[in-house]
Length: 172
Image (cartoon, rainbow, N blue to C red; front, side):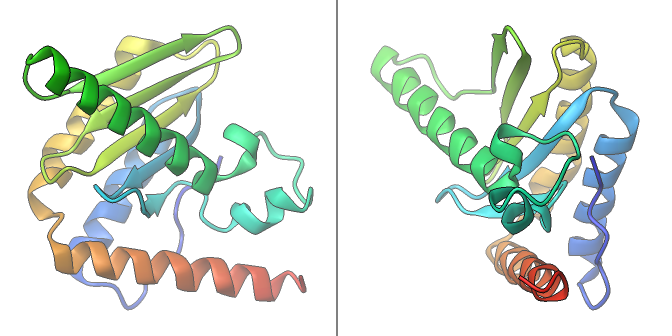
């Protein structure tokens, strides 16, 4: 998995979030894909933003997250987030802090960020769930207070520009 690479021209806060995501990716073994999703379900930050178009066209042989795309992971994270938030409201048990799904061939972790955004991680079957959860909590603790509406807009625009640049550069 690759970490985000393009931070030129971004604000200090956006560069800091990219650094936090890169640190999460590099520090935790077994992560396949990581995505930060806004409260309205849009991908804000990704461990592999340029692979979305590439993976859809079968142009990669690197290990990948769900269907090889952070956009797909973002969709899954948003859906699980909505489902668990709705369940918590129906049960009247307060807010959802995290959700973990253990599967035969991997794990999915979703953690709430203070502004309603979500951090989602797709892990390999052999990843240590406690290590993943710990590092996700560190990310959320450090990122939660800076995800303002302005920063979310900047991250969306940056991700779209990076994906367009990489798609154009691949000749597709």
